[in-house]
Length: 400
Image (spheres, one colour):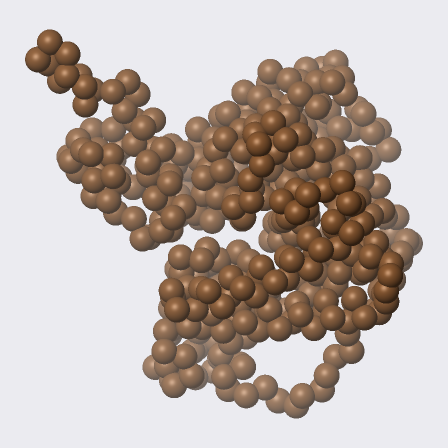
């Protein structure tokens, strides 16, 4: 607080300041790892003082996410109208990219912590975000009348994932260049050609042969059951008793195989890494040197096939790192970084104009589109979703 003429003066918009501090703490520690007292202490106020602005921690999270959504709505309204031009569309994308770069923590909270909102706030965000995406879809269809409403919606969901991808990595660029790159990637998505139902080109690369390994061990059954439950209900809403029941054993018996729920999550991450490594090895070996472009295409194809298979990969990339024990984080982070490094290496070979940080941002945009859309039921249920997802990744990577 400032003191003027002996009087204490509160900073302007204390509510906004508290929300900004809370959003950083939520991103760093996860929603369940932050208390109201933690937020108050970081802001230099008392708990009762914070309660003058928010009823509880859930209300703070709702304020952060709804404020971020309001910013996107304002940008949409300002840039588009019934006579939207390509310049206005680019202006909208540029505005959304700027907000993503400036407020990366909001994108992170939207992705990881939105499920902790109360039912009313979840409904409000779902209603308003759907309305905004409908507006985008209508504008896109005026520019691309050959698209069906569902196809336009798919492209708009993927565009939103491009902007959300800034929350899954820490690579950064000068603000102007960062914004330009995200805008360019979003435009690639909106201009992408979705495959026709009879077009099998996107699935041309063969998948690694399945291995008949006999009946899975009890440990593997527990892992599979946990992955399915984490995927369906989220990490925090699943108990060890739930996992044991799904695996056909008593809840306490799960502890014979895994000491904690966090250790289960780490094991799922390792298994997902093994699946990715096997699929990538097959894809890169099949392409053969020196065609890096075809290798990158096959790497993207393999990711889509792996992602749309067993649930381990979705869980590994959709559960926030704060739920994993600190001793396991370095290994799992190394696995992910090594995998992304393969994409970056091929991207810089195919597009030598990209510097490594730009290639990394591009790779994460492609990966995030795949991760997000696979978890979005209204698009993942499309009959040719795998081929369409592959085509979107090829468009973002500019290897169509």
